[in-house]
Length: 76
Image (tube, rainbow, N blue to C red):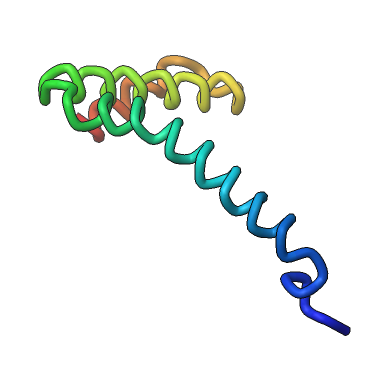
């Protein structure tokens, strides 16, 4: 059996170039958001993200909200 890169070298090259082009286009906004966001805003947004995920987890597991205070007390 022949390796795939020998069957269609131009297709593999175009696919590789296309994927890299898409990744380069999408990494710039992510890099700017992560690197240029002030520390306090980053900390607050991460805190809200953690709270949201814990709340969502408790809703999905159908655990009463009283138990969430125990988790927050341990985390913070």
